[in-house]
Length: 374
Image (tube, rainbow, N blue to C red):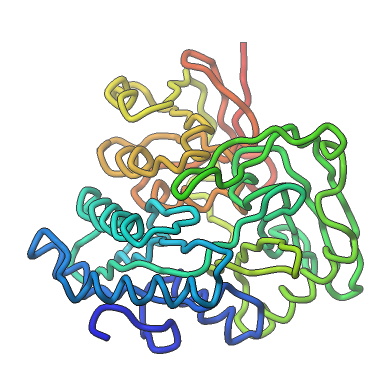
């Protein structure tokens, strides 16, 4: 095929493709089959302003080959972007697509996003990933696993009901496992009032967690240790990474992995006080002036994956901003594009700020923190 190949046949610079190849090589369960839309499809689309008949034919064949093996699942269409000097460039993605016409629209959306945000520079690879859609719904869960940034031999598992992206902006459980002892050494069980679930072929929505589950441990001790063993096996082979997982009735699937390292703080002496400007939509960007140094990203931007806003904020301001970003260094991976365009990112977990709130930004232990002040 000219435009689409099985993931085993692809040689790519894209971290998301490389990550799935690593997961498969390590013997972890991943969605299958996985089809890759090659960069040549993007080049032809950009040149001709439309999809060729051959490309439409290949997408149709790939779509139905995935559905045939997974008749009870739709098809996911996600980004496969490599952009020089930008790690993990963001982009839109679908939910559970069951119509080939919608898959074609989703690929067009990805390609248009790359063009709009100037990801199509020299040396870039712009493509897409197709695979069977695996997305937890209550009472199943998703989350991520990383090495501890503080303690040796400790791994950190973060989990929430519904899709793993909920951990970026919503209270969730955190489990610490000592991999040398195969023992859970700490559990932080959050009150989980809401989670995110796929609500249509294209959308994800916030859902209320039933009261009986709000204070319950999201995944069992047995499953925590199973996930820890999978992760240990992986990092022994490939080194420090961040893995995303989805729990289903038949077991745990791993859907993404990227290299993981603690972000270095450029200026450890930073201590700034100032007023916040809150950004909730793309139109709010016009309110940011040169004197607005501290910008808070509304969590709903992350929940709805409004990456047009994130990339616009990253690239359209020549002066460096301090970005108060929902989540943590382990969960807020979409913040990478902000750091790599010169802005300072301060992870604020579940803190909330309003425009004109006074805050102080300073180093505490190994990371920057934001605290409200009077």
